[in-house]
Image (cartoon, rainbow, N blue to C red):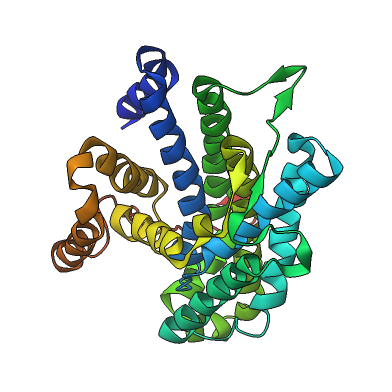
Length: 315
């Protein structure tokens, strides 16, 4: 297991040096979708909330970056935390009245959220979103005087951020907060009976996932230098959802593998691009029948009770 991980890290660290800019850009897209799917995985895979509106928070982060950079010339890197905070605040506002919903009901409401955001962007709300044409001329991130421009530079920028995301979500899932979310996912009524404030925990998970998606929106906007409402449609949310379910809900390696399959394979088989949605649908049906937990589901966890010390000696 550790050997496979080491080989994967070495391949991803040095492999792009042997690839042309096109395939490096494909890896960049895989990295962006993997981070977005990881943030959704924290909501769907750990808290058990069927959330199909993640593209809305991605859009909020991207548009906050684009508007503040093009209008006020604030550096892109400074806008990354601000984009995350804006997406988190929006998530807290829209999630509070719906957080008690479960299953299909929550799924339908979140679809409505992403559509409302898309329509608001198309109609040029407040006169700053650029309408259907979007926003042009977004700047590039800059570190210590070095501006990131080329696909190879963006590759390390994106994949280092992906590594940070993996570490963060790994720490969260092993924390007390992550264990509480897993309890809620397994049986919400039993979790409430154990004294867990389920609405509070679910709201925090929702807001945290949105915060991370907003920061990815910052990276996406600076990479593309142009954004429009079509980049944040309902189908984008379907793509993130498919990556999580196909790879393994609740599994970080599974989500990264899912991003490779969903984003990378269509580039390999470009001659079948027009049939992509048909292939996705067939793959989902096959997965639900033969492997409903995903290709790399999370490993089962065991917990041991600590032995009580009696009389100064451990029993």
